[in-house]
Amino acid sequence: MRTKSARILIVDDEPAIRQFLRISLVSQGFLISEASTGQQAIRTVDEAAGADAVDVVLLDLGLPDMDGQQVLRALRQKSTLPIIIVSVRGQESEKVIALDSGANDYVTKPFGIQELLARIRAVLRHYPTAIEPSRYQYGALTLDIDAHVVTLNGDTVHLTPKEFAVLKLLISRAGRIVTQTHLLKTIWGPTHQEDTHYLRIVVSKLRQKLGDDPQAPSLLQTEPGIGYRFCVEFDREESNQ
Image (cartoon, rainbow, N blue to C red; front, top):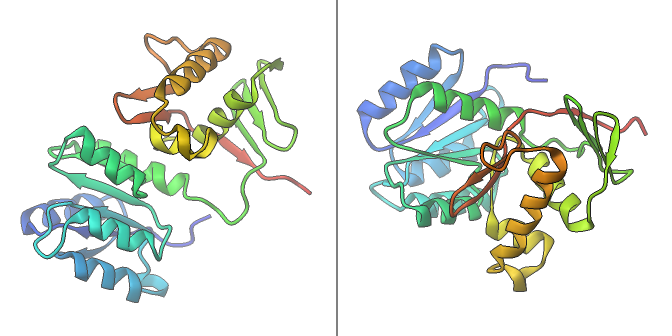
């Protein structure tokens, strides 16, 4: 449980955008820090502590002193705090690079402030804790990691090991995009990073077994050319053991 308002670090070289974001986020109860360069952003994350510690970074890619992708990699080498890319660069390749480098989400400019607020709430809600939950539940769907069991409406859903592994990884990052590369590398191994057809087959089978309409999925959302997002919020229950 958070005992203070979350502090957002806005990293953007355009004063008008920083002002717009500052006004919008402060009105929602967030605390704000700002940086106009990549080096300033890295320094802020390194030096901030206590009440000034950063909880989420909103990172533009077009910075004057260094590319935002470099800033992302530098921050990821020393911190696991949530980072949302907020950039005019909408190319699929940019999104894939950022997400594979550790970004938690990617929002393309121009954007609606309500969408950005929802993305911020999502990364704060699913920010990893020290203890991994042993059980995820959403409505009638439950995934028990220790028992290696998935149930839907009280009935066991029989999944293959690969199906279970994909579902577990997506649920553990609910609300966030998980790239195809990360899924394939983590579950199939580094030699299968290009074998996207394996992943498509498993996701198709999961949708079928979970009753998720492939034409309008409500659980496993496809981000074309990038990856997948488990798009519902789960209640996480830690093991009592």
